[in-house]
Length: 401
Ligand code: SF4
Image (cartoon, rainbow, N blue to C red; front, side):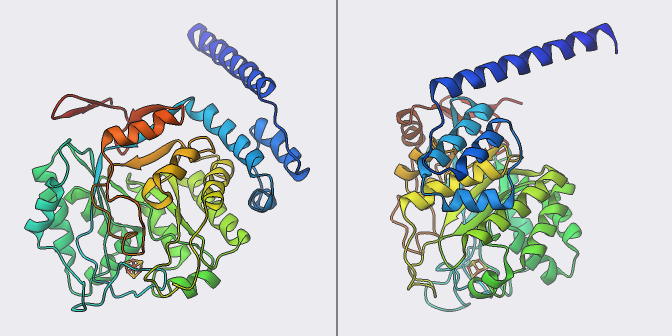
């Protein structure tokens, strides 16, 4: 070891020691207390930065002491991100709601030619990208239905046209489900499909379509979609090609606690392998206008617990997102004290959850997101899709690289 390396090693060791002392100090200032004895050994392991097991995950879901679970998740979150909470300025674009899949969980997809179905012409999609918001967006989030006739080229042209018109904007497009569907339609492998998407301008992938990996549940809520293994394999290939993605979990329908833990641990295992996931986003099921309309909506406590358990089990995910459109701005704000470090973005126009009865606004202005974060006692940081901080002037932005 050279003298310089030795000094760096000593400095690193000292910083870790200081961090540990600060950690203990934090623990002393705000002691962990619980009436649930089962959480005590979990707490010890969390504070020692040990990985939690499947059984621990089930206990975290079943514990009656949600505040203690939240305390632990908040501790981990503050170790990772201090007091910062992230948001971005983005716009959603849903090019078509025509879909062959007919998932029971869905209120967005329509059969071709049925009432309410739509497909944007390319010009229309590009115009939509520029409309509805006055501040420069840093991200387009593009997802839609599995259209039986639209050729793969339509999607490549859509992305290439957006890149040409908005070269600074990051394009986060197509769920693993869409990628697999388009690959099949174009008679290409997943790798070939993703390579073409990347060449057209796709910068990363959103995390939708993961739902719940357990076959038993998947057969009921989204029988015609790719299964959990295919979803994970598509993500593995994308990450291998340098396309980062998010990961979601749809909860609050017919799944049980074991299904949720299984889902989270499968994501964790893939993240160990690829490191390609950026953010975990738990999505609350909205039953209205779906074939599962007899189910009830989730409650605030359930929503908050997903954030906390996600933060505790996914020790290799940098970010846990409390998606305000799904959870409501108020619950997303509280989640910033229960393990969440991100509340998503301005969105501008949201169709998928509003078709399923979401009562949240279509979009929030940048200042509204900052207010939510500030009033949660956190420091708002505008990020781009890759979590680089964004500095704005009046009509443009720069990204710290
Ligand atoms: S969830 Fe997606 S794949 Fe399933 S019906 Fe809706 S749009 Fe189609």
